[in-house]
Length: 391
Ligand SMILES: Nc1ncnc2c1ncn2[C@@H]1O[C@H](COP(=O)(O)OP(=O)(O)OP(=O)(O)O)[C@@H](O)[C@H]1O
Image 1 (cartoon, rainbow, N blue to C red):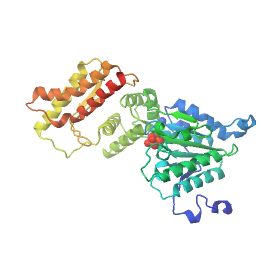
Image 2: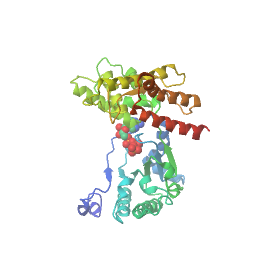
Image 3: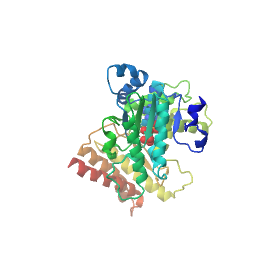
Image 4: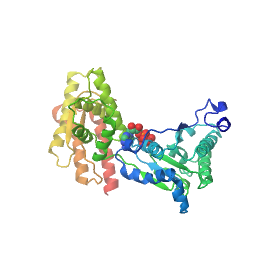
């Protein structure tokens, strides 16, 4: 069908130079690849059912929601879930990122959106995914007077026009991802546009286990390794981490094993990978003087001792005086549980534990060092939150 493809289609000769949006016709990702966000999957399932069998809905006169906003912290699998929706429904997946429109020449953003939707319609049923929609969809009252916002606004308007212009027979579902659902223009959230909101949070213990299970499949583990036990341990070691962090840890562990010429990846490699993701790369060439090492050791031990004696402090896993990442001379790794309500007692104990390093320096040396500056920053944040949130 040369004719159809030729008129400005994705692979049109005249537009070959620009990569306007990503197109995937044969999406291999499905819901089994997205672990630990069952509620989000359930909500999005409705779109899958619609795309697979639109007639069933149309027969009853039902109007299917046009689109959904997938919101949540970075790396929680929003893009992955959108792609898996296309994979499950067996439809093409067209994606762009909102941030790509921000610094564009006048008119380019809007014309890109037009082309994107044109292609999606021609290939319907299909899914359009706009990542980082907050980059173009910020509330229009905000950030006025900055000059260069016109293009952003044009792009947003074009997106709204395209969504309004759909008729029910256009079987195109528009999904959008954002970390900042709170700043979105209310026009985007009106019925007939992104009227569904799906929130994806960082995974809890069980979720992390499931995500590890997905990513461990690709890793060569030792034959005697008990997968159930391994994913439980790793999930316990990674509180607060996102799916992307977990994917990164699995990959890092395999890289570490390869660096050591190991035949398979072991628990120890994963532990090192977790440390690397939490605290940064070991700085082998950062040589501390014996006196400095002593200060760092007393400082970290101060945290550890406070943690041991305080009832509400998070359990401490290890302290290290190996310099890592950007400027960290030592660090303490805790295992905070997944909790949603912080008592003032817990916050007080956390603050005390953070200050334990500095107190230890005061007790054991004639002068204190700048090593506690990071702790001070954390404690100031915690104290501020405590006053603002606990009253
Ligand atoms: N729930 C999950 N199950 C399995 N893998 C996951 C999950 N969440 C994230 N990942 C892994 O992390 C990678 C990055 O996730 P993704 O790009 O979907 O996150 P995102 O929420 O869109 O991030 P951002 O907000 O930064 O755009 C995925 O490719 C996948 O490997």
